[in-house]
Image 1 (tube, protein in one colour):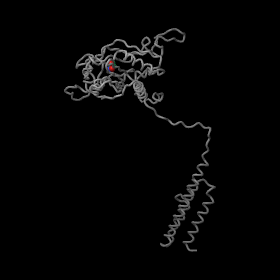
Image 2 (image 1 turned 90 degrees about the horizontal axis):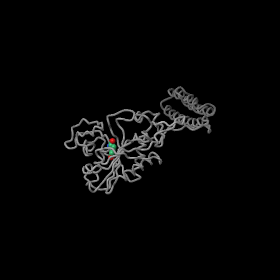
Image 3 (image 1 turned 45 degrees about the vertical axis):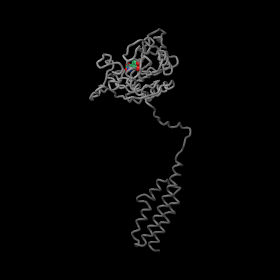
Image 4 (image 1 turned 90 degrees about the vertical axis):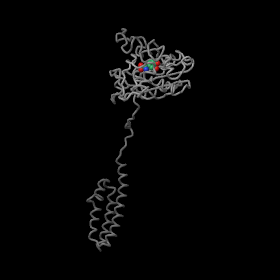
Length: 354
Ligand code: DAH
């Protein structure tokens, strides 16, 4: 027998042997034994060097075929072998996939938007870095007016605009009021909702330097305080629960006349101002001020603000309201969040609860 024929026969024997072993050994061991670096296939292939040039070509082809056959058989076997090793216990509980969710503040924003959309408000957005004019001056607070001190403002290090003044980070969402009036160019009604970021130089357990407010503005003919009160009451019941009451108290804002502070009844003491301790004694509710939570401001749009937005205050009226998203959210039933800064701490344990 020629050297060439010997090698071809060895190749055939190798494949025969492989077929015999295939169902007896595990796939991994077989792969090493036959196709590993020092495996039987490579040992056979190494002998090619004893052949003549012409024979090498032919034997090379034989080797290729052999290798393909070995590989494909092995692949089939590996699949089978794997399946036979996976024992499935169908009574085992499944592995729950972790699912992400919106940040609680985003959830609150979505919820607030939906509540107001139902009664015809349209959500708009305006710059969150804006000119002094829209944030203060157009809202009846001329430069140097002391009322501005309430808003601890961040100023942007930029040249002031000749008529719009300095650039500031918006301290409240009320900058949207005159911007909206300018946008509609006299077309009424306005039923605008602005939910945006606000910034103030303050940080403690009820304040963060960046927070969110939502603002509503309605302008039309024959708008009066009852529309304002009705809207606030509707929101209170939708957002905090059907038993929640709202009240407005006289207050002072430069951009509304009359102005009010808005309170919602406390859900812990049900608006009574006291709870019972473990001995059934009445004690003051420590979550609220005598049954109420103060959440925001509201009022009838001041004639000067209507004028700044291009509306004749003898013909048209408006109401506006605005308050904090985070603050409102922390007052929601069953949430007991005593440090508002937790929202922005990136603390997973906190965030995963929502
Ligand atoms: N912008 C006020 C604040 O940040 C809240 C506010 C009060 C908004 C009265 C209004 C309003 O629209 O009419 O404290």
